[in-house]
Length: 208
Image 1 (cartoon, one colour):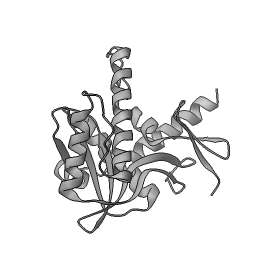
Image 2 (image 1 turned 30 degrees about the vertical axis):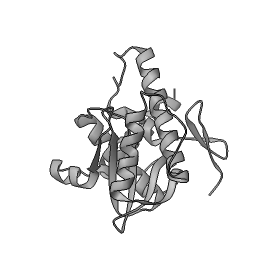
Image 3 (image 1 turned 135 degrees about the vertical axis):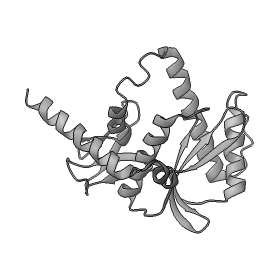
Image 4 (image 1 turned 60 degrees about the vertical axis):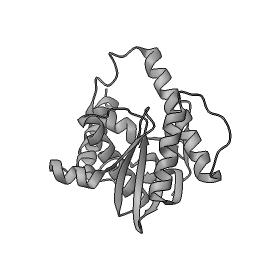
């Protein structure tokens, strides 16, 4: 395999200079309207908040108790993550781990960054961290697809979870596979369909 790189500013992946589609880029096709009707400044603030919380959680996992003060707006999310760690005692083997899948059913493969890979209660798992107060059906479905894509790319065949950190200092730990069973769909199959569509659209666009 060649050298996989991620440009954080442009949020693009490349393999030996060739552009590789990202998981979140592919999943954006599931909701083309996205956040189009939300004020850009609100979106920018939410994105920055999510980034800062992720950075704090990463530091917490590496260093344990973090004595550095955090802005009051972020404190509930950080406390929620600390409570999750205390309650579940995960054993992380990958933190913010870049992954690449070269065995996708179509296209050149895809890349992404898995928030957490490891073991919980003795089982292999992939966990995606979200700072969303009230996630809806679309968010649940997309995170099921997202964790399935990361699981396949990292060859981690086990449990998949979404960890929702909330502004009231609580958290929700959603079992993605259980959610899929309840709603009769498969996250990886659905992701594969979106990826095939993404590939086809780009091939058509490239012929113009």
